[in-house]
Every structure is written in structure tokens, then in C-alpha cells.
Length: 81
Image (cartoon, rainbow, N blue to C red; front, side, top):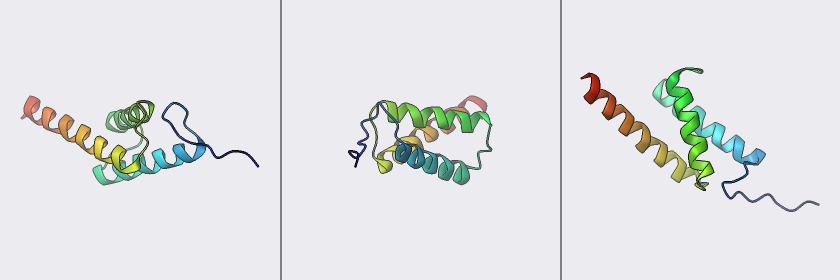
């Protein structure tokens, strides 16, 4: 029997990838991001960046991504509004 794989943000194990994909899919669905769009790619990068920085808690990842997207949205409204 192999030792359990413990996430630390440096290596993404299969369970980590599934969880990150679920978070990504949920946020894309909620915000109406289409696969391959700039917004979806930006979200994917931000998700992996958080994980790479050691953020492994699902709630913390979701909250951080919502804050990030909120700032981007507000900045876009100011720029174009």
C-alpha cells in the first residue's frame, strides 16, 4: 500500500487536479465564461497560480478567485465605463 499523497502546492496530484477542475468549472459556469475564452484562460492561470503559491484549501481558493475576478471586473468597468 502506498503512502497517501499530501498536497503542499508544489505538486498537483490527481485529486488536486480534480478539485481544481471542479472549482474552475463551477466559476466558469457561474460567470458564463466559455471554454477557450480569454476570461476562462485567465481563470485557469489564476487557479494554478494560487495552488502553486501553496493555497490548497478549496474555500480559500474559491474566495481568492472571486476577489481576483471582482477586482478585474471593477477595473474593467472603470476603464471602459
